[in-house]
Image (cartoon, rainbow, N blue to C red; front, side, top):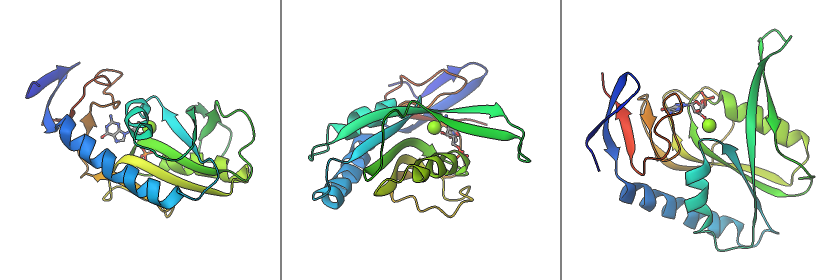
Length: 180
Ligand code: 5GP
Ligand code: MG
């Protein structure tokens, strides 16, 4: 692995090596395995694009029968007072009565996950939980509980393992942090 990499105009330095990520994914998968062992075919819903690598590694460690799907949050300028409206694309079929686990790359302010959860709750699932690879406790501004947090970080900007800087860096197997 390289210690310093350049993506577009910024330099990033190594922060979390792949082995540490794997340990964190294993630990969170073990918790989910315990909590959902007796639930009827839970449904994992990954949020594209950022969660693809996390989902791929997480799901291999899940020991109960499950289903898996991916969604995308599309932003467009709406007519509401807030201006920004986000809609959920790709969730076809009913989730009524299902146990849903949303898989995210990172929860920062909580804005995106709030839109997701509102939309999902309206579809009357039996339960909804959030499993995020990274959580930024200092920037989270919402009250929705984030049940499964593989790792917590400060307010720094990171890339790698699915996370991008203007589309670059998603394929890196380690996590890098932006330098000043
Ligand atoms: P939120 O809506 O919780 O503020 O932010 C969620 C989204 O912002 C994430 O899904 C991700 O796309 C982006 N984001 C927030 N923090 C970071 C970060 O440190 N690195 C990258 N690559 N994206 C981030
Ligand atoms: Mg995301």
